[in-house]
Amino acid sequence: MPCLISNLGNAMYKPFAILLLLAFIACKPKNKPAASTAKTDTIIPLRDTAILPYTAPDHLRDSLEWRHKLDSFYAIKPIAIYAPAKHGYYYNTLVADVIDTASVTTTPLVFADTTITKLDKKGDNIIYQQHILKNNRFKVEVIATGKNLEDRRQIIINGHKLRYGIELDISLSGTQFADRIDIDPTECSLMTFGTKEYLFLKGYIEMCTGMACGVSYYLLYDPAIKKAMILEQFRCDFNKGYDKKNNTLVFIDMNSFNEHMPEYQCYMTTGKLYRFTHTGKIKPVYDKTGKPISFTAWCRNLDSPVYVIKGNFIRSN
Image (cartoon, rainbow, N blue to C red; front, side, top):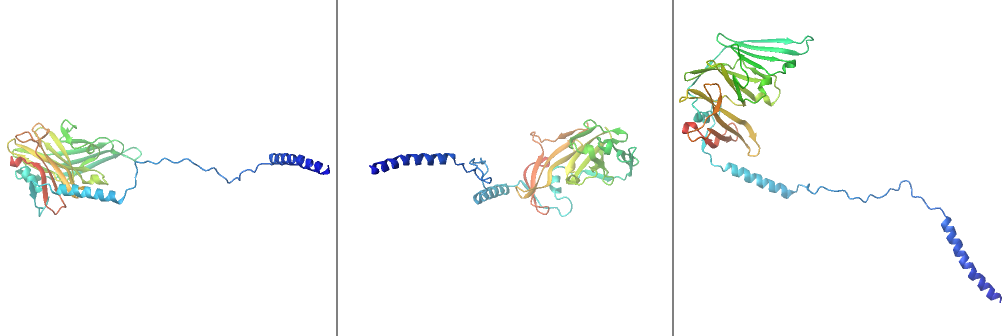
């Protein structure tokens, strides 16, 4: 009997002990995470799949493509080769094959050089500047106005204002000249083409501090009709000639002259022939078949031959 009671007590004690243990666990406070614990960012950032590392094979491929392009350019058979000139402008022989440069007479002119400047009331800004070149036949004025001379400049010859696009053909001059052009008094002359004569003036960009210092403006004035033309060139002479058949001057507009082309490791230039007509207009010159007179040429440096790879010369037509 005592044994029966003892077994019964043990059987009743076990469930009670389990319940007590569960109650203790439920009442025990939960441990809080440490303040320094952070959640892990599981977001995977997007990557631009168009941007890939530039590998050694890429460099090799580009190098081979560039070399192929360079070899293809040098393989172009030139239509003419000109040796570098010993004296002066090394494109002279090429230019002489395009136009008649021998029939042009140039007589230097001497001008008195005067500049009149006016300041604003405070004396801080220039508001008026008049540059005057004068001799016994011509009076040339370049007038700049506005705060710091920001207005378009006026060009007046012998009292006649050359209005842009009317008395002054600006089709080959760009627009920059109108804001900063001035005339070099040491580069003036009288040019004669057959029975026609013109006043020649060379301009530049005033107060230039950069690449524009290589820009020249060549202005030709016809005293008979009181009209003029202006040609913008970069590091290039004024290549003029005489057309005996039409008794007019012709000139070459040279583009990209003396500009190095890294793609082909050379200097390239293109030239196109124009005429200054008796009515004061610039017109392109064509051959008998209607093709423009032009050329494309290159040289490795200023001391190397000039290779013409494309051209249509008036002297050979």
